[in-house]
Length: 194
Ligand code: MAN
Image (cartoon, rainbow, N blue to C red):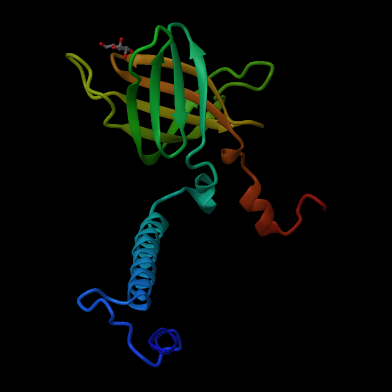
């Protein structure tokens, strides 16, 4: 009779006095897991809100590239560029990767360079630059830095890497993200059609 009353919620299940009933244990566990979920969600909400305050360039276009990486073989190293993240130098002989800087800000640079027949090259004019700073410390030199100079191209691609001064690197990179005309066309409302 007691079991029936307990099962129907009429009598409290306090047979083992001092230890709580299964219903209470279950409710406590459910509360704990809901509470954990609220913490996880509110922490990711904080991260997202914080991310919304960051600069992702005109039309937020670099938000789409964030966390994507491209790389290029160059002599004894393979170089990697992670959009809005970091740049790295990886020795082909193995060993630890060398951090060449973390993205800090956008900048502009006036360039006057060759463009090869296949359209790869910075060309002439003002180009958007991504500054990567505070990379791995350089013996007898500065913390490594990378100046990423961008030009319009059909695909994301590192064209060239040079170490202009000890531990100061320059990467020439092609990307559709800087191709002109997107915003202007939108504003003109179908100028192309005319
Ligand atoms: C490594 C590389 C080079 C750099 C030297 C500086 O060999 O990161 O690019 O010039 O360290 O000591």
